[in-house]
Image 1 (cartoon, rainbow, N blue to C red):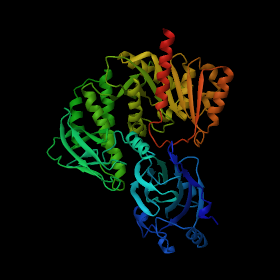
Image 2: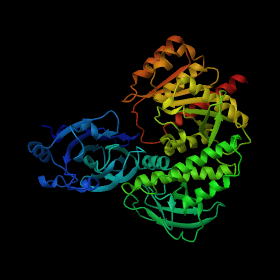
Image 3: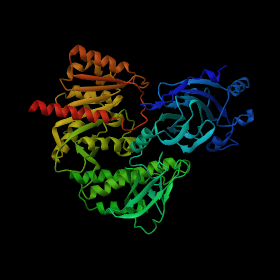
Amino acid sequence: MVALSDLPSVYVAADPDSVIEIRNWLAIGPFTFQPLLTDPARSFFRNDLKRYGIKEGMIAGADVEKLQKRGVGVCLINVPSPQLKLFRYVSGKTENRSNFYLVARIHSAKARETTLIFDGSYSYAAWINGEKLLEVRDKYNVNKAGDRFVNAMLKEGDNMLFVKVGRGTNKRSWDLICAIATPQEGARIFRVNYSGDIVVNPITGNTLEIYAGPYRNGKVELFDSGGKIVSAGSFANLNTNDRPFALPEMNNLQDGFYKAVLTVGHDRIGQTVYKGDFSGFVKKTKAGLTGISTGALYANDLNAAMQRVEYLNGKPKEDPASPDETRFVNRNRVFWGYALYKMSGKNAVTQLMTYNDREDHSGVFIFHHNGNRHRTAPLVIIVPPELQGDSMIEDWYMSNLDQIETDNALADRYGFATAWIYAGGRNYSAVKTEKEISAVIDRLQSECVIDSKSIFIMGDCEGGRRALVQLALSPDRYAACVAASPVTMSGGIDGVPVNLLSQMGNTPILIRHGTDDDVSPVENSRKFYAEAQRLHKPVEYVEVSGSHVNVAKDGHRYVFEYFSRQMEEAGETEK
């Protein structure tokens, strides 16, 4: 028997100085349903507790005891990561299982307003002390890790967070992430995670819908390509977790790209949208490119960008089972469609570029530059983790816009350009990747947009391992390397990074690892750093509390700060 009192409390100090991830839960379920009688997508709306005389939203210790006596599964869960994967807690088949009920106890040192940050799949609802906070339906995945931002009051002492998570039709994930932040930090994370993603319907008709996260007051403006405001509106005391803010009166606007800007206080968040028939834009653009001769590098760039846009345009226009998935695909359509539109005028900031290596193998990479092509910029090469695709143009990696846009914004802030390489996808090898990087650098040097003396390399997890392997292959190429939570004690035919340290020259390396990482255990970095010290290599090691999941998408800020510091030190040395 499991008692509610056995559940450890999450402690919130009087003045918390960091985001608090909830990792301890009491789980009830999963409950079964009859798929022949109930649509799996609608199974979330079954009140499984009602038959036991328990109301959703709160539960008492006696209720927990009663459920177990009547054969309902109850267990305590402690996870190293805030991402709770409920598939792990189901024995047997899952086809007729849908709903888990989860309870967390939050002990607050004082009564305070807080922001609860959620992400979940397929559908979930949350209550605090019996008051319903939000309900989210039909999400296939936890793309952001911090997706919903809800302001709530914690009373002094114990508080009960009650969450219902339904699998529905989902075979991808049955997950929940929840964290507690101060209102100020919650607003900051929202601005990071939703930069470039505030619009619910990025391909729009007569009404534009805006999600404002924890903000209840704000202003929305829509700008045309000339920077003129063509529509505007404001909202006050509106919880957009319940319903988005709608900006109407767009039916008189011409089809094309516009920029929507949400202003909340002194902060502005923008996103490009397309108004009208996006398929018509694709057809028109393709027709305009038919006269461009192939073979020239920029013509190849345009052709690759066109392929990406056509690939996205060929996907179903709407996913009836998941409006969230429709939004995700439409955001990608607009982002890459706008990139193609700007590329046709040779003024894109983020674009696809192509290369041919010295053995005449071709490929595609994402290049970002802050727009000032008259000055060369130091380059950061971003090595991907393990990918399963054959083509970058069709890979999920290019759809990872939250991370792409966030890291590119950090690069702009610190004055870097970025190159997101593909590393062969599932056909990865270290040798192929080295040739790809050489070809990417050659292409960018031919454009005179990068500083060949200031080339950096970075990667996360398996991408961190690959970055270190590349450093061992070409140690004189890079000014510095950063590997976040890298795998260093394995590697197969590519070699094991911890065994390659002697080949990495004197290039400065920064390793950063979370102590609770359950994907790439922290022992990887501890072993690597110990070996680096033995060999007297210039390796810095930073160990932080945390796991493989970051609620905020700007976790790479330290990367660009480190690269900036290396450039400053190199400049001082030259003087």
